[in-house]
Length: 407
Image 1: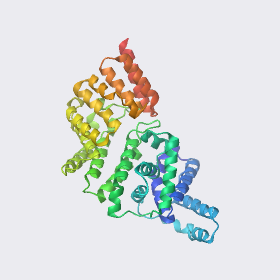
Image 2: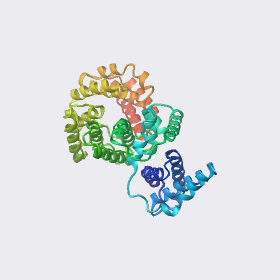
Image 3: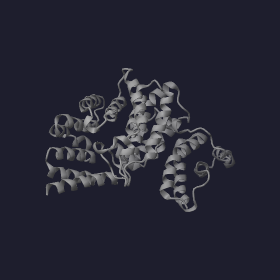
Image 4: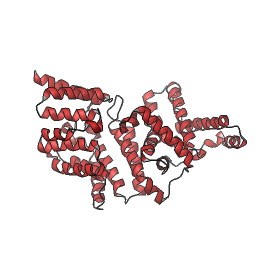
């Protein structure tokens, strides 16, 4: 018998490789994605009971390929379909291709036939193995809306006749922005997961870093690719200090910086320094520069918050992203006081809705401003809105601490 949590992690890791192998053989992404989902469900059911097979990747590809054969036979009895099904000899499924098709799969999902709003969720589902709920949370839309968007994207990609192959250099450049955004969201979901009992999912963040390294190897001169990789490395470097032994969250201000990975920091700083010298500043470079300022401060008190405010101001102009405004409010509060940060939060509800991070930031700033009663309410509201257990525990504990201090 195999531990079910271990099986889940293994399936998430193998899913894009299985989909790549099956899509390459069949030439039909939509049907391949459906078949792979069925194979993953079968594995999730049988492996914890019967044990993980010796060759789990081969097992998944074989089961998914059988599903594809069944789909073709049942969907259309015409000779062409039967010949296609018959030509798929299951004996030919091994050995598996030595290549990892994940990068090809990612660029295929970001096909020009799809808008970024459709391509990015589809890629997160196919490559990242994220659930529809997780993707919807990243886009701040209802789960049902995201499910429809992904379904339409699959149908449109199938109708486009997209080939399973790495695009030409010109096509690659056209799809790059969507690919980078997928990798960014995949890393973020791994670094601070939107749901579940753990603060982070290291399998996702590690996979995002691996794939971004692959893209950087192909496009080494692109400053935004380098910027994104730098951002991931500089952020992931803090991972050893983010949680206590029991898994609970340690905020940045309280982390033991001696635990930070200095090799990753050095690599990230070198990448972002070289990228910025090209003089083509982009949003990932700006975020990486912020991360570098944090990582290069020996102590939290030594952080150059004025530089961070300047970087977030530039980033806000680039993106008009409300999360950037939220982060800028924190930095401004560190420079000009909590009241100045609270002013920047005014009106963000219209853009962020009832997002837990807005309540969390407001709570921290209210606490610093001495308005503990209001801060407690905001901490409680933030705790009620987050679906991450570790974040909820931290926010609840902050509210309890403030209540204890008032007595």
